[in-house]
Length: 379
Image (cartoon, rainbow, N blue to C red; front, top):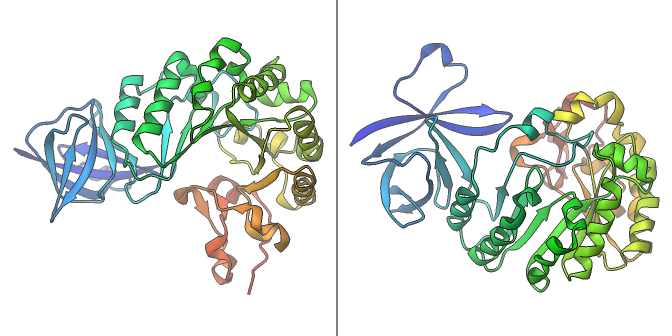
């Protein structure tokens, strides 16, 4: 058995663990010592689940075989990691979390103007196969509360997607499974029918509507015809008994359109139970088009609050995501969600004195660099 050191660096705020046979001094600004592994065998294309017994952390593959055991390091019971051919180890799931992310593809059939991914990211070849996705899901903890399936556009898995959803539902029997999609693929009746099997299960799909104006929606989505495809897709899903939620990503292009969108949702799709109103993450396309899409929080605030009121009047539950809590009047706090992933959150210095900080989602680190917002410290 040989000892291998694993070093940790940060990539866009996320942790990447790299197997190194030696350490190069001039990389010291990138790498910090992370953990040590003693191994007797390694399969670089397999996923591993971390299990802890006494003082040792075992790495177990989907066949139940133990090939490695940890002596120390920044991994915990329930973690899922993948060891790849480029000598990198990626931590795919944090075992201390009650939620799991299943990132099925970086590719997408739209090109949204405010997408936090870039065109380059969405068009490059996938690094994970469908078989690996299934293997990853099979190693997730069985007591999860939430599983989010996202991309890219998950429906690019085509006929494989229903199987992946079913495996997620089977793996965590009490988890709510949410899939994010642009909804366009569901305009095809035959494809949508395959998802009817999830109508009475813990599964729902969230789909964005950018505007009630077809041309504006298509412009924001970066794809002509996407408005009609999305609307038909939502209709098909509801007809097949699949629960659908609506997302509205707020930008300079549509913040004045929030109420009309909500009214149109109520008119077209009375079955819709909730609408989530989302702040932007200024990365990728959104950063490239920041002068076109970015609007200061103070300017959009009255429109977002009126949109919440409009949801109330329509019998729809509103959700406010990716905004600082202090942006809104207290009467709207009950529909506020602390939603930004931990490693992406930033707070201003003044926020340290706020008694509501623990309830506030803060700012995306990309938004933090862009905004002129003045926080309202709650004392």
